[in-house]
Length: 293
Length: 277
Image (cartoon, rainbow over all chains, first blue to last red; front, side, top):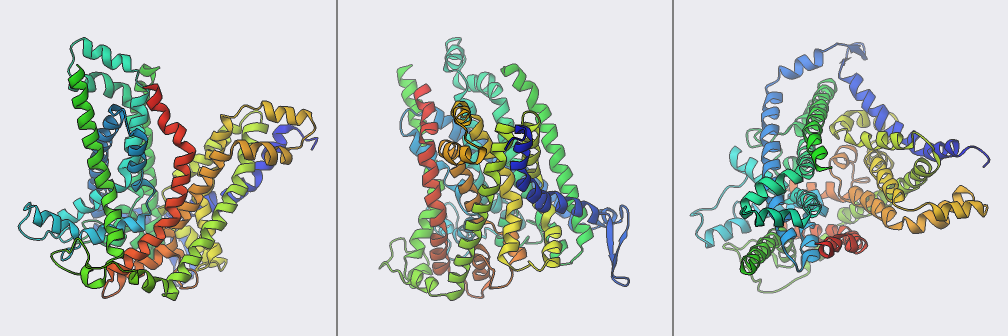
């Protein structure tokens, strides 16, 4: 008890740090090592192969397909969520009544279980007896049932829509928080100076919100890079691998082909990509933060 | 100006009502399907108003031993992960924010940063390690995998809520001769309760709904969690959507309740802006 506070402080943190080392740090290091090793079945041992696994990875069509699919998936999700999130944030900021109720409702998808989202959207998208087709047919918007997951393009779109349903709340609330921080006088001043609503949005609100937009985009992008629960449940990556994002590709390489080395290499590539995106985005977002202060 | 303001209000409400419909419809449809007789579920064109309301889908899924087993497994995993996450993160957050003089914040950032590894980085290492120690296809194995996600986030959440609490009470208690454990128990826990409850709910909800790790590390029936079982129900030749939606409703309840608790805890935070604006 007489020990110095700092020593006691670290003592309190020791159990956590030990467990974290065991379940985070060691596995991450092991994975990094694995990316440079190859299992030798004859000698039953692991052999250092340098960049061999990466070489093998970039030689696979599946990898480049996954890179392309992931690009569409990330860009599609981020843009859709940003547009929808911005509209909701502006609306939340504008209303003077029921705001707490609206924001509670908006958060519902965010706390929804991913598996349930997948199962329910499968049911909504059902090609023969799905409610989405029923509504569109009744409204006369389509003349025959839509195969939501049947063609590569439609499947990509349908999965992005389902993922947007799940994730746009966080984007909306992040942007809403940013909007709330903008002094109302600034918006009013811009209006009095003769700017219309769109100009106020474009030249006053958006620049001032740059940090929260950056945060929202970053969260949404990282999430999209990592999430493949929807594709594994709803399409299994198909049709024609059109929804096989990198996460699912890595999963398949590891546990369908049991090529642990290549899977580890691919996960490193993904990790570094996310890291670069994060750092680049923080760089871009930073100057805006300075002008704000 | 006055009428323009009213027009903006109108469109804002319209937008939010449309969003509410977009957000709530999947749940409404899930609930509606779950209480329809099977003949109405497969009717085309869709029978929006069922001829009768039934609980037979719930009865069917609740008499499925595998489903009940998976619910039990999910409950055990969630409770254990939540307990361990709080038991490890609360003392650590207290130690690093209150006792460590310098470097505590850097350490916290390091802990949070460990959360930025994509889950794919852990697929193979966990698999190999769990197999090596005989924990593959067991509940303890899955718990360990979940701790890698919950611990960094819970520690950060508790530390953040501690930072906003003045230390005067703790200092007074220390002068009165209280030790660290007593301070944590009698002062930190009650005052930081909202942050700790939020962290606990995060850990619980994550473990309740997580799917990929569960699919990888609990393939056997004995350890299977509910989300994995849902996946197997989907894999059946004839998918019984009515039963699946009943299962989805049941699985949503343990998440809906903590969500309501969080809403209550942060009601002040969400409405604050309204007063300010």
